[in-house]
Image (tube, rainbow, N blue to C red):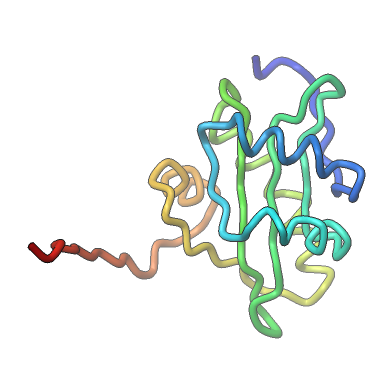
Length: 138
């Protein structure tokens, strides 16, 4: 599946229906915003997508976090696309754009276990790990 040419581009509001479809179908997804936030994020040019004409292969969303930091808010990949390839292809233009906007670091507070290893291979560093247990009251 990874031999198909994908174009990585900034998403527009017209891409919203295709993004929502991908969100519903993809097994590999990390999303830290609600569907109701998508139109705003698209209007703010915060979303990049991998478009193969007939289907979206993935998308990534970043938002400002502080004057020098940005936050990875979503990373979704189509079933069958190699994780490392998808993550690296989607990260590259987003990181270039963030640097142009004066951001020096991109953070991710991922709770998706599938995402941690590919982000580390892409240069992210694990800083904190939060583990919690909950016991229901009887």
